[in-house]
Length: 259
Image (cartoon, rainbow, N blue to C red; front, side, top):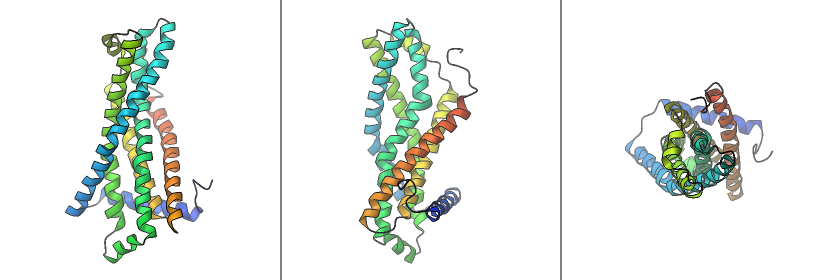
């Protein structure tokens, strides 16, 4: 597929070296004041800039899922299980994955477009001339911003989803909030796993989007192709990694109906 593999094995080999270099910088680095300021800017853009769309999406997705689940459970006279099913779904899957998808579309594409534009206009070469490592200056702040903000956005999305779910359950299906919350059997471990997922997704989004931007070649058309490719690749990796993480995290866990 052209989108997932813009050139060839040589292209993927470049991505491998970019990610390895980013990992090295991640675990052994010292940031100057300018780089710290750049990091804070990235955190502001990613966190504050994405918070509104994350909350709105989580709110309406929570309402839609509650409507569908509560409707079916009401026919089975099992409305006391609605809270347990919905909160488990939100904390384990919907919240981290949905947040990652939003960040990929809004932030990941911006990362790729910005760095790709710098690459095709030879601004990256200027950094080398000034003896400034582009990985340390451009990639590292973006990776750290994703690692910091995605778990926080995940928490806000989770709280919003549960709040909207309680609202719809009480208004449309007359399930008291106390019953909804009492039936919820989410453990601290579930929150930890959800945060780990968000952390992994943040690393995937930032490394793929930055490496795709750094390896852009050509003119303005290449910027668009790289941006599309990075978004599609990031989403595909998120869904694959989500399945693997869910399997290893939850396949031996006790059912919420047994707790």
